[in-house]
Image (cartoon, rainbow over all chains, first blue to last red; front, top):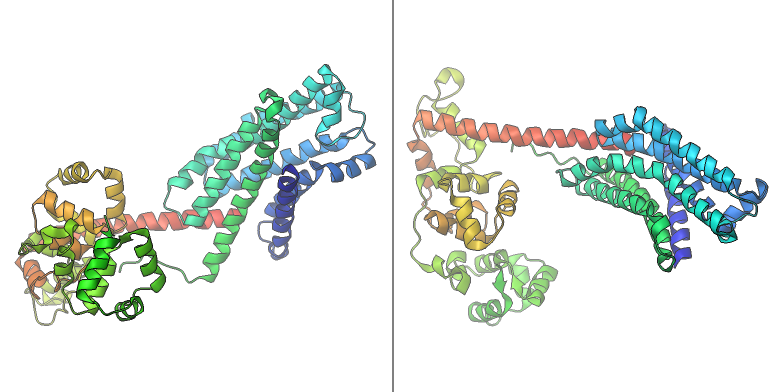
Length: 243
Length: 248
């Protein structure tokens, strides 16, 4: 079940990234392509087999996991800016690119690196499962590491949350509103995933559900906007004129 | 509330005992899947009944009145008030009337109801539902309708904004306002003015009876509302363009 969710997410990200290639060649919204590409890399690195392969190349010290965190940070930062501009959320844009946003990005980065260095990270393991199993000390550190890594994405999406709700309640086209709904749902999932350290192990599968549904919602939401645009371009414009 | 399928089947049996479903759909122009779905769900839309009545050469109003929900429609129809009639004049026709009454220097004829003025377009028009409710509203109408039907005021307003009103609510609104039942059914486009028993020149006569001052302020209100809705539409369009530009 979890494997299905993982590979579905990866496949979807891949497809969306590839679908954007023609747009990139035309020079439209190049940064979106990179956002999707970064997301694809992030998903790839969170699945066992590809993670192990990459980490072996990087020395088997789980540096791939650290790379994964910064890939997510970068992707989510550009995504946040794009979304804030698109949805005319000046407040969110100011929050993300202003001193508060930079401070949170710096704090999250430092926390991730610091906790990573404190852990005994020898032995490749996707999601640091093996490190978690070493002893109580490392287990606690892995939880903090995960929380620090989710802090920044949660901040960015939470900053955009009001704009999503505004769009949802507006009179914009249905596809655009559904995409806002998906993005808002993704935000909720990311924020819930912050709770990972306190989720009891019996509900451990919920962590995966939160993580992957967050990415799925974000990617689907973004593709819906693209779909709406393509459809609107093809269909003749319906104008509420002075009839 | 739509018509119960059971009562509808009985009605069908009475008015067209030998017609098959396929025949009915063909003569009335209803999609077969839509028709079948309404029967299966047990709720038949009033528009279905109206289409079939028209196709069979029956009066939609009288046939609608044969159902329990709409039994009030059977009474001799109370004619629409002048305000209701004017509310069913399209905004562009109102503006044309303003110009018609102006002096020839501005393209008018200096009188009213000139034979040169084109005929009014038939109801319903783009904002006919809201204009009808505004025409019969004494300020408390929406609350009374909401209390009588249990429909939340914001849902009611949303229907008006979308220029829609379910036939049941249209009748309830007319009842709450104490006006004839046909006004709402015409404004929502369920039945035509002729089917409602309105005399052919009634709308034009009501329009002609407006003084220049009344006509001008009414046209002004309509223009203001039109401007507001067009501006909102333009803003939404601009917002959508921005989203596509950044994320498409």
